[in-house]
Length: 474
RNA sequence: GGCGACGUAGCCAAGUGGCAAGGCAGAGGUCUGCAAAACCUCCAUCCCCAGUUCGAUUCUGGGCGUCGCCUCCA
Image (cartoon, rainbow, N blue to C red; front, side, top):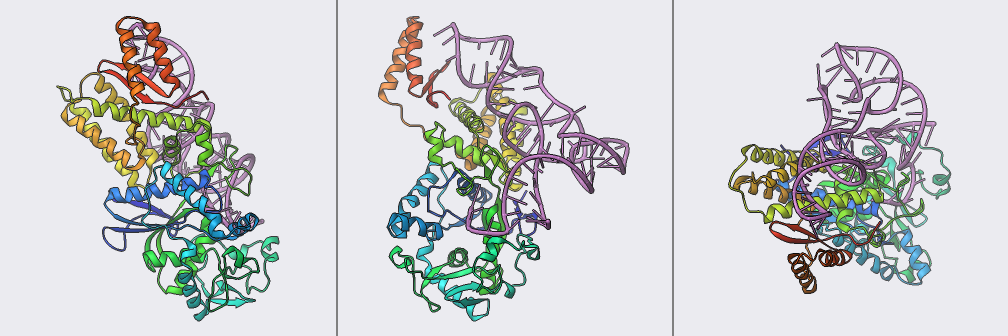
């Protein structure tokens, strides 16, 4: 079965057909590095990760561009308060972003263009828009003329005539021709020079509006028309709508062919997580709270479908940690077990069926939760078969293949185990000696000590196994 | 006010016009020196009311509830 993706433009799940056979170009709206990314941001970024990984699984060579917005109003405000330049202000948050992505095991994109490094591309595009009457200058600012782009609104299906005669919109600037026209370029303000936030342009010194960066940078790295554009659902309007208008008006070519939007992560109370709405949770908060980053990754990626809203909660995170543990325990068990003498043909067929079902679920608009459900069901059956020695050569290799396929997306199974410290090894040996001497009190004491240090032991016929566990109580 | 989404067990969640995946938590059991892991068993009239249908959780209409977008936002 071929890959189907839910395209916001059509509103349906459509067969994915790339412009160029075997290649997939994707542009994903990245972070604004004015602060740490919150878990809701990270959910979107892990959705991108799932998409790029599955495109690779299907066989595409992926060219993934993820922009970094390093200039916007919030950054300007913060830099001004901090008495520094936007470049310096942004630095720690930029590295924090890459650290978080690494902690969550997100694959690196092929390009991470920064807005401030592509001002020239933006200026060129704005100039083209001005030339063709799609933009106009008003008191030094440049606006996009929405009236010049009749197709505006196709993505979000927003009826602009129903716009509320709003307080905020009207209170904006009234030198715009229409309230919906948006800024492409903002005239330099007195403080902007010190912040390092002003550039020369034929239409006056200033700084870019927010939307233009994505149009300019996607063009630079992927061309006028490209395969996939992703973002959080809140970017659909107006950001993505504006991108389409700018790009298609400037390039006279269709923009992104497929639009994918991921749903929000909500706070425990059910409300959308965002800075303006109050508190927000970062990955660092969760890790400090004792949560395993792998559990966070699994929760954000596999707990629910990307187009379903999810709520962040400790319980959900603990449940995810258990699922990760179960996957890892099972994969480890298969890996270390030698194929048994007898082969349960029914099991072999079951594994093959689950492999196919898993792939089919992912091909169906990246339905990882469904695929994972199939896998867990099989794990129970396979564990039983392993208990009874019914897994032969075929079953063994089928199971290994399945777990590799699962890990190609979730990437929590092969995540490195830290090496066993010499001291821990010594303690295990000591405990074994105590057990052999039937000094169980001493053996249990040693096991408890290790547990307190995050090492859990499992006695089995093949010997003592150890693994890392979450330390402390919740 | 306009547009839209969602409501499945204590919690998270997939899904389908025909006996309701999966995970977590819980109860009982097998195994174990004790544990852990694993396995077995148990745990849902799919928000309410109408309609269409042989049959609806799934389709249609209405209601109630939750949330999102319309304004910076992943």
